[in-house]
Every structure is written in structure tokens, then in C-alpha cells.
Length: 254
Image 1 (cartoon, rainbow, N blue to C red):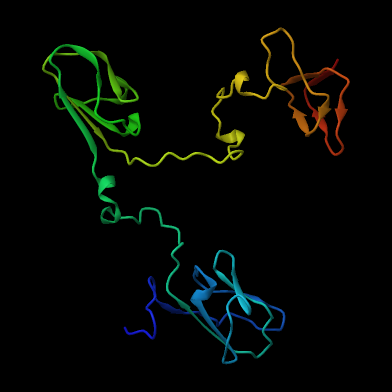
Image 2: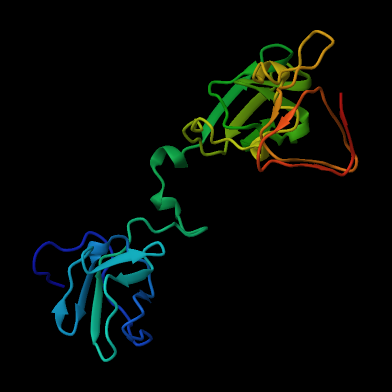
């Protein structure tokens, strides 16, 4: 269809269903029935007067609600249209088809080698995304995951492969960019058990190589000692205001 001005880049014109909106000089927030990416994608008419985005209304609830600056009065009439879709809509699970993928994401990495002598390991021509993403075959026989190990770009087998054996390695995984977490953003729940060593800890709480324990003289955050735990502190100790120690197990202050 033809447009006055530049056509919207995405989506379409959608009339907002306002039949459920109740104007009573009090309500200011109303559901749009679909997500709108930007307040300027809405044309809102109140009593046949076009309203100004941001000044007369804003979006809330992730673009799903229209919020008027001033509550419409009882009997007011409203008409609203959204222009274009929301470029920020979340992609639905399973909705991306193969033709939407870039060429490099559809091309599997592959390595083939014929062994000239017996060997139990081999350096492949690429770094696999993960062991689980590999399809490994020897002379056409697909190998189970427990038949080989992976370290960087080296694949090793439990026993040496015979001379003239043909190894084929295909990486079925999609490689992604390495993500570096923002400082202070990694919570304890994201850490594997025993992942943090004493050498990684602040010196005030590190376990020293000498046969002694060092603790600060202030308890700054609340703590609960579980019924199956023992705990101890070396005094004198000051417990900060609003901080508590809940003892369900055994607690000793020396």
C-alpha cells in the first residue's frame, strides 16, 4: 500500500483495541494489546485531538501499556494506532529458520586425517566449540563420547589408532563470541563447587599457610549457622547495627 511520507521499516499499522479502557478521571494506564517498541510509534487521539508523545503519554510495562500524563475524563473518546512493529521483540523459541542464519553459522567445521602409523592422539585444524558438539568417526564408525577426550585442539583416544585408519571430526556446534562478565556481576550461584581457592580470596579472609586463622573485628552482615555446622570467632568482636547472628548449630567466641 502507499504511504504519506516514509514507509515504516518493519511491521504494520495496528489499530489499538480501546473497548476495554475505562475513563473515569482517575485511570491513567491502559493495555495496548501488543508490544510497542517506542512511544513515537503510537498515534493517539483523545476527543479528536492528537496527543503529543512523551508529553501527553508514555509507554510502560515493556511497551505493553499506554500511560496518560493526565487521566481522561468519563465520556472522553480515544483512538490509537501503532505504526510499525517492535524491533526489540524477543525471538520466540524455535522461530529462527535456517535461511535466517549467516553462512558461517550453517557451515560445520570438518577435519579428516589418514594415520600413517599408530597413534592415540591428533591435532585437528580448528578449535572445537565443545566436546559434546563433535561428531567423531574412525573408518566410518561413529565414536561414543567416552571413547575420546578433548584438550584445546587435540583429540585423544583410549587406544592407538591403526595405521591407515581414517579419522573424521565434524564440529556441529555454533561458535559464539566470548562474553566477559562485568566486574561484580558474577553471583555465588554461578560458581562451581570448589572453584574458588584461598589464593583468589582477599587477604583479610584468605586461609594462610601458617597454622592460624585471621578474622576481622566487625561482623558487617547477618549470618545463619545451620544446625549441622560449627562456627567460631576470635574476639573482641563488634556486631554492626541491624546485623544478626542466628545460631542453629554450634557457635564459639574465643
